[in-house]
Length: 513
Image (cartoon, rainbow, N blue to C red; front, top):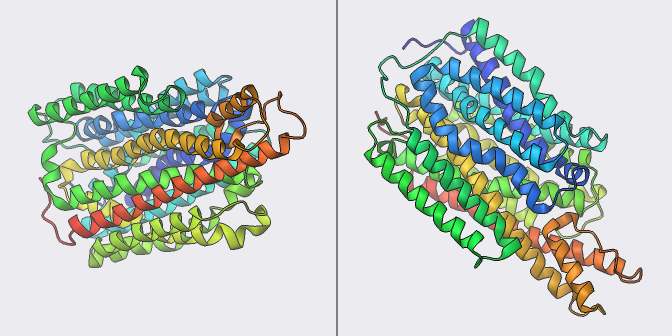
């Protein structure tokens, strides 16, 4: 398969088109976190609704991204990439027009289907098109630029949300996607594995989709009905069964969507375990940090978005350089130090209590964001290079799909599990806060029922005027307690990611073919 130089015209068009399309998907996720408070208020959404709005997309993405990568390898990477972009554009426009939580969740599913076809295609095109000697640098460039645009998402989202225009977070994907489609159509050649005559693994796709959906549903029902309700434990048990069936299908299939033999390569396995733990911690940490800043700390949504600028600056200045160094010296050291620093950043952020708002940012949230950004800057490009470098070219789409699936599956689990934990932590802290308050049983129950809305909890109308400020303070204290616990668990996941690199990842590895 012919490859091109990174600086050649063909190489530049590949980079620009893949960066634009990837950024479209990633900006959607980061900007959405920031506009959630506005969205929650505008659509009268509960805390559980918010997690479904996030998870509807992640669930489809995680469920179908493996088959999206395999379809690219078989049918043509550019063709499947473009199909994914088109579906994503349609889903985005429909999300922007949604006037209810139900419609928004449904159209987020459509976005997820498009993303599943689109996201593996970007790295697969780069890995199969760019000369091997420049692949790490190309992936570093992709990581840096997509992260710049991605981390610009919170700023854009905050500005739009403060102006009452949160829907434009979805509409902005339309011109970006159209530009990427035009570049791909006229400037990028089709690339596919001519030797790949295998069929597609639809039984595998169906079973993993059902498994993940049931597990997510089970965790999301825990705060409302309790762990021992059939909706909770029944869904969780059925989900685990479907995931076990998925593994059996992959073992027996002649054309598995997740070839288990790839995991005999310790670098590939270690990098994917690292991805799962680190991105679970990062996803939960960024979500709860955004909610904390706006709903409890008194930041506007634009100010909340601006808090992530140090992260963006570090990614711009370091990610590409880290990719080049990983090409020369191997990714292992970066993948030990990077996740450990990211974990340290999340830990620092966990210790922040009630602050004086944006004026106190530099002495409160800034140090943690800085350390977190530094850790991720050293991790992103070497991690992707380690995954793509551990398999042969004809597995590039599948490998990219598996690694992206790990990121999205970790996001699904993190949102579902951490969402349930946050409500439980919040409820427990709130229970202690109101124990000594002069409330009757009915008022106490009304106060506790608001716990499912987390930081958006409102003082019930039945509470007396004298008690309202005290209840509001209790809600803030309860959320900060839950936030602290969530951030510390997230930090532990970052450190666990570093341990995976220490144990499994090697600088020199034989490619799995």
